[in-house]
Every structure is written in structure tokens, then in C-alpha cells.
Image (tube, rainbow, N blue to C red; front, side, top):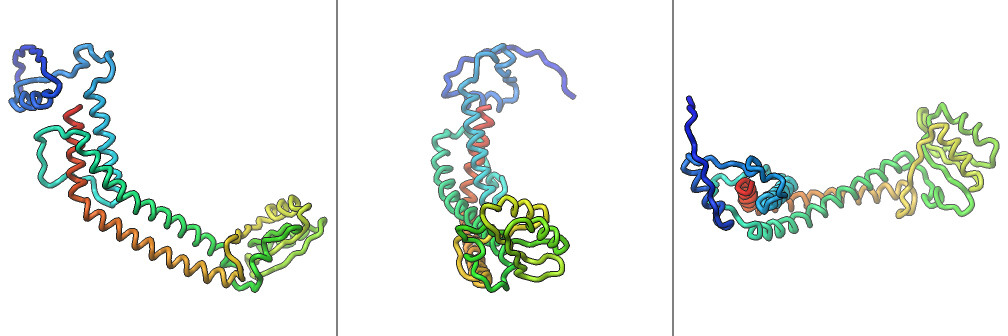
Length: 269
């Protein structure tokens, strides 16, 4: 049970370089109650040097946590920790910069390769419906005078589409027969492109986007895309392995840096 005891107010004037050491010594005795400066009517004097320090340590702490998350490491401190003194920001930051640069290089490469894989897989999905069509892709999309629409159309809407475009010159091809969603190709003059596009949209035609950087038949392009997809997956696996190695290399150092930044922030607060 706790009982109130009379206390004596003491005001100490301490050089700024000794504040942490003196505060630790006083708090270690367990008899000195430190008062926040806001209780003394000093809250309107603006941010103090220590508040600024605490903000800088907090930002560095979050940065270290982000690096650890990138490496798949938990936000843990070293098994054995000490809080003997505040660590100067200038002594922590260079190590964080060095590790961050090393990790970011691999992480950026991994992110870029994953985006490339997504693009390749999307292009493959676009081409798979016409993979068995023996037509040059360039012939389906490149024309100076003709407007071309290639896509998958609900079979029940073919008549609606043909009726809608019946008033303008056009050519309608069924590239792949299917009882549910045949692949169709509509050609017409560029001057009637708006009419053709509106008719296709009204008939719920899902357009297929053909990759510009490939030539040949859809079968040839899909084979090339599958090879590139496999190569991209292998590169991603290699980069993930590189990140795992970096995690093993920097785990102990990051835990120590995280602890130093954390305990320094707490002391500055």
C-alpha cells in the first residue's frame, strides 16, 4: 500500500552535455520525481532541442524497422541489451545509410522484376485466346487506313454487334469458334472508328491488347512469353535469395542499431 509523503521541490541547473547522465543517476535512486516542463508553464516556448532530438531518433527508428521488414526480419532487439547512455545520432546514421543502400539496391531490382513478370503474364493471358490463330499479329493491329478491334465476345451478342455496325463498311471475322465466347476481329475505315468502338462496347466485347514489341503469330509470341516468364521467375527467386543472405548478414547489426535508436529516443523524450 502506498502512502503520500511530503516532497521538496528542487531545481537543478545542469550543463546540457550532462543531462542524460544526471537524470539517470537521479532516477536510479528511486527518490527523485522528475517533472515534465509542460507542468511548469513552458509549453509555449516552442520545441526544445531534446524534442527535436527525439523526433530525429524516432525517424531513424522507423527507418531501421522498414529495412528489417524488407528483409523479412522481426522488429526485435538484441538478446542482451544495456541502456548505459544515449548514442549520438551521428554514430548510428552512417551504418543505417550503408545497410539501407545495400538492401535497397536488391529490393528495387526485385520490385522491378516482379512488375515485369506481372506484365508478361498479363500479355500471355491476352494472347492465349487466339494462340491457335495462324495470323501475323502485326496484321491484326497495324494499319494506316483501317480501324481494327480484336477481342472476346459473348456468343449471344454477335447478332447485336453485326446489326450495330451494319450501317458502315466493315469486315467481321470469327478467328476462333466457341459456343460461349468466340474470338472476333472487326475491321472498318478509320473514319468510322467511333461507331465501331461504341458498337463493340455495347455488345460487351472484351478487347485483347496485343504487345507491340513482338512479331509473328500468336503461337510464336506466347511461346516466347512463356520463356521470358520462366526466366523472370528464376531471377526473382535469385533476388529473394540475395535478400535472405542480406538478412543473415545484417540481422545482429540491425537489432543493435534499432535498440540504440529506440533507447536514445526514450531518453530524449
